[in-house]
Length: 243
Image (cartoon, rainbow, N blue to C red; front, side, top):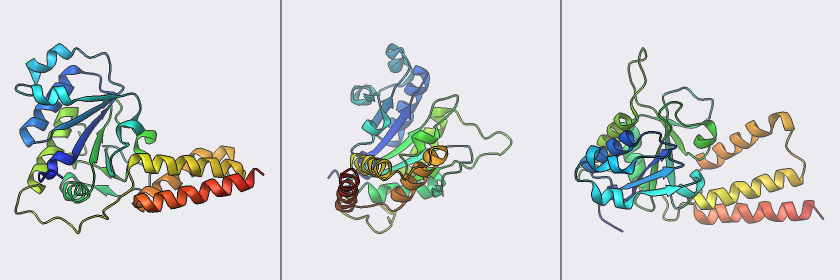
């Protein structure tokens, strides 16, 4: 692997609406040494504005990847944090940028770690956050908590830069084969299939039940082997149930 831990940090913008914000995000990333930007369903952006806003970031612009679905953007990642300013009912750990940065870089030793940022007007949805292992909240003045998208990215990128300095001691390395986003999505698909096969879901509670189970499994941070084991078990149960 590249010896620079920042090389394995991915910034994901979900449905960005402004080329100015994408350009300012690229500039913040370039300043702090981040290199991977992924966009999920961006608006019809004026890409010609990026060189004006994001000086000397041509290399980063060329590497920007665009996805239609969030699960596709996270398919190769082993850890995802959702940046949100609002209190959520999700039972996920909530970290500050200073706490999140070393945690993400520890996991980046074995696979990409992603930081998710939502639309400029509404942020990340609960469906977006269902893909995350933890939430990230920037401790702002409670009377004016809203940050511009690129400002939020800069705060996080700065903490990542500090955490990546040679004098930083990382937490104990994560397991060497953490489940990727693709692994966990396969697990969740098998879970959904099994719950429907055994008629487990109550219609009025189905969404909340699925969200709670996804949160539980992501919090457990399974390895790829563990995720595959549980996926195979669930599929076997589903097959037996429909006989």
